[in-house]
Image (tube, rainbow, N blue to C red):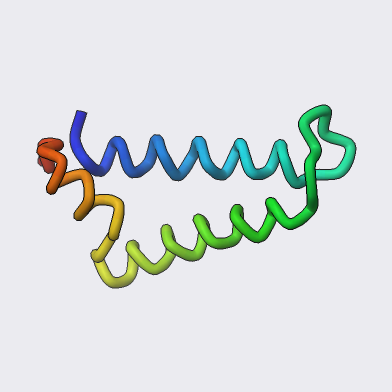
Length: 69
């Protein structure tokens, strides 16, 4: 698995989990503040698409994850 596949896996998982925790009416609802985390992940995805710089990818490369193609 390449580092970008892992980044997408993390981002997708974090978005779905934070939506489940932040949307009123969800059986897992905790607080609407979880939606701020959803916005943070989305902003990071947007930023990395423009700048081609992703902190999670740097961390994964230091942990030895293959960068892939």
